[in-house]
Length: 158
Image (cartoon, rainbow, N blue to C red; front, side, top):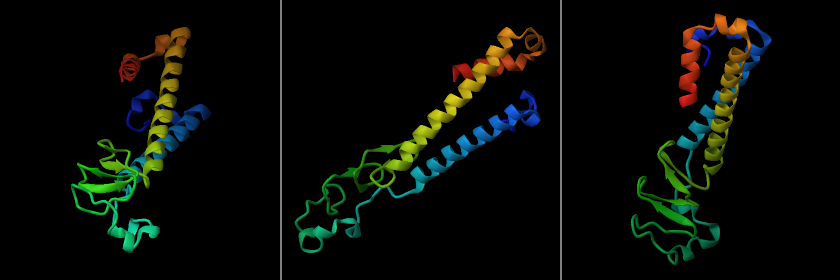
């Protein structure tokens, strides 16, 4: 985040700036990792090998069939109209990760949401702290540049 807007100042000039840089970088890395894991991992598509062992092979014929894809449909499996496949323990198809959220990638999806909220909360605290210091510190207020106010206003609106 500091590299994208170098006019905010030198982030590594102080211990606090270096700590904020490390924390923000770690948060963003965790958000990116969990997003990629939720997007590209198998949500639990139903295949003949994924049918519970107690139901193979004789009971495979006794399983109900999906009316959309005609695949064996184990209990708690649902058909996704976007992916056009049945998914075990399907929660929903998420447009943000462009994948179904099912039993096998639900953990990554929840991690993605948690890390995103934590990252945004940390950024809001940093922005609020900057606004607080500008409000009460006369020297900082006189030295503040116009784009500091623009960054604060845009961040608050987002």
